[in-house]
Amino acid sequence: MKAIKGIFVLSTVLFSAHTLALPFMAYDPRTLGMGGTSVSAANSTTAALYNPALLSAANKDDDFSITLPTLGVRVADADELAQAVTDFNDADYVGKFDAATDTTSDPDRFNPILPGPVPNPNFAANVTNAISAAQNVLTGIQTLSNKTIEAQIGAGTLISIPSRNFGFALVASGTLGGGVVGDVTAEDLAQINAQIAELEAALIGSTAPDLTLFDPNAMTTNIQARFGLIQEYGLAISKEYEIGEADYAFGITPKVVKMQTIDYKLVGSALDQADINIETGLTEYSDFNLDFGVAHNYNDEYRAGLVIKNLIPKSYKTVLGNTIKVNPAVRIGGSMHGAAYNVAADLDLTENDPLGLGGKSRYLSLGTELDLWLLKVQLGYRYNISDSDASIMTAGLGLNLGLDVEVAGAMNPSGNEYGVAARVGFSF
Image (cartoon, rainbow, N blue to C red; front, side, top):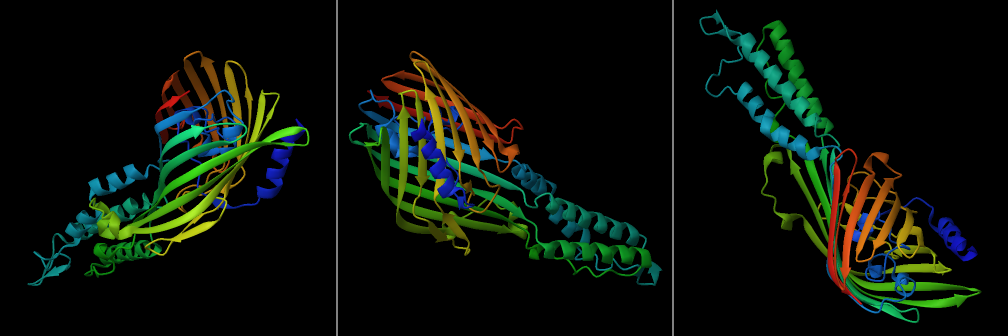
């Protein structure tokens, strides 16, 4: 048991400093169903995705497995930005303001005195209507302020041959992650408020207002979308060593990385445009990185693990000059394994950041699995230490007949985050 404690103490000392990294992704249904636990609880079928050391520490009776493929999807809209953008466009606040202040067909629309001279009978109504339209624009764009949507899609294909003496796996994976955020600029707010004040003064003083203080077509309020598509091709290698009186499994995954950054901004009147050309916001990089893991079994019942994803810090510039950082992400885990059950817990030691957009995450994951012969049932809970409102409940089912078919789902109790995963593969 001292060996297990050593893994946790060492990892806490080395990696408890604040750093930002990409969030851990649950690629497969078993991991998602167990709340995202994977560092010590992943089986040899998917070990290379989470902790390469498990190729020499998990499921010692496994000989060979193929995953073709596994897929996980997560979408979180805690602020309901998607609905806010839809409501803003459907309400057509900008178009209504343009119509309320248009003087093309009636140049004297906002003149209190008409040629004659005679009082303009519609002056007060026209100004009042313009004030209401401007206030609606102000209220409308404020509903977009600092709201975010986060999304992750992960897929992986693996060929694994686990062994305590020498385990290895070929792994190809892709992760698309990032977010969308609404940015209401102080400049727009100041101009709209100035226009409202001008109209109100004109109404009180019966004077012609200056309608040039706010131009909807020159708005700088924007919707920003920033994503990173990370494709990785690696060879995971593992081996168990005896150190003192304990056996430790060590694993490493050298991998070729292709990074594509997508950075896009819809500004002002373009907010209602759906025809986004992704290529104009795309940059591409080719790189290299490493994953490292360690695991220790105690009496074949308890297991502890540590993994460091992306051991070499990297940073990438986007088209818009933003920086996407891929820093080492560190996670520890412990699990208990019985003949018909597994129980596991994982903890992020690094705070993770969805590419600088949206809320940060640091997960405490809890999960259990019941083995009902051919059917496996998973339940879990993932608590976000950085934002408790972003926690989720999870569940999964797996049918293992040589041909493995697995599905899982996840949901936030508030109904603003969902996740699904599916896997088809073979194991022997």
